[in-house]
Image 1 (cartoon, rainbow, N blue to C red):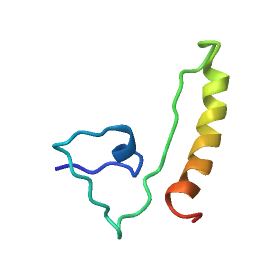
Image 2 (cartoon, one colour):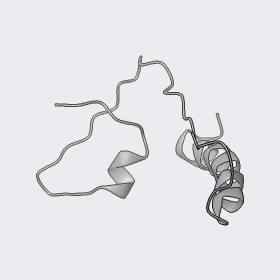
Image 3 (cartoon, rainbow, N blue to C red):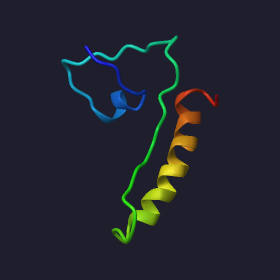
Image 4 (cartoon, one colour):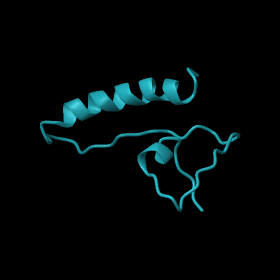
Length: 65
């Protein structure tokens, strides 16, 4: 038994797994961490997606809430 986000069932399917919602559970914070200084050239694009996707995806999964 474990607890995960609402995205897990759609990303990780297996016939032996069953996902049950915890309707009274608080929201799970989503964070992105990176090192200081120069990094991979794709980091700015990843950062942009990290800000864009949770907002647009949450509306679809929670009926616009």
